[in-house]
Length: 318
Ligand code: HEC
Ligand code: HEC
Image (tube, rainbow, N blue to C red):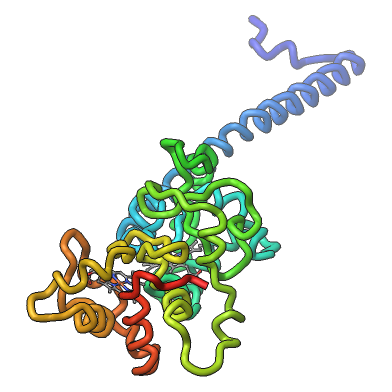
């Protein structure tokens, strides 16, 4: 009779049996180890894949919900919303705010809850509430995706430069809500949508209003105080206190105001521009950007003072 192929299992010697046992244990351990070893890169690949898909979804959410204020490239719109694709944002912003949490938490919380700041401080509108649990339109997973998308700008933003002659300028706009580089810095800052405009540190420092400056004022405010505290300078260039380029340069307003609308003298025109910004749209600028309720934020006397001050070529910025 022929021996079956597994005849090697018919072992008599106990030593050999023990050896077989040890051998099979070793083989099992090796197999487990190998599997573990291969699992790690597989998991990493999975995670990368998942993150990539999350960022893609986030990109779509951003384009549909955020781009009209923060710009499609996340570089902000002057006077409308701050840049997120910004070296300043990723390197300095949190320490300026003395925020101790992570960048991820800061973005996610801001997006979910919004920023119920006073709209007349610096930006044309408030940062809306997005998270469904705070009454916004986005589900938790959508907030997470758009957060991942914003955080994904980090690497690109770190290549930005603070040298105003650079092609790749950091598009940040100085914030009014906290000490920012501009109040202490010694380099030259640039602000504005295209980053085309170089602003010296002392100019930016002048444009930054600390909340106390506006709240301590009693009695009618001066033209300068109104201009700064109502955020006009976030959209209009003026002397050393207006830094925005969303609206027309105001330095020559006294020369052009009377020529804008037939039948309106300079005072009437400027007054109307504030009371009803969309009644007349300056050529090459967009309607609907200048807030229409600014006149309700000052008294009649203050409005007159502001108009007079804006039209005075000898105004001071103190
Ligand atoms: C209506 C305009 C508007 C829209 C739309 C908008 N934002 Fe904002 N966002 C703002 C403004 C204004 C601020 C600054 C608020 C402040 O500091 O008072 C801001 C602030 C932020 C900040 C914090 C920036 C910082 O440096 O503190 C993040 C992050 C942000 N927005 C993300 C988003 C995302 C993501 C979306 C879309 C889901 C979005 N925003 C949609 C206006 C907008
Ligand atoms: C969010 C940006 C924004 C803010 C804030 C803003 N403006 Fe404007 N402003 C514009 C834009 C855009 C225009 C041009 C479109 C138009 O004519 O309405 C404009 C036009 C004007 C004009 C007409 C200028 C010209 O050359 O004919 C005046 C005057 C003016 N703004 C005054 C003010 C004053 C004063 C404030 C603050 C109380 C202010 N703006 C705040 C965006 C802004």
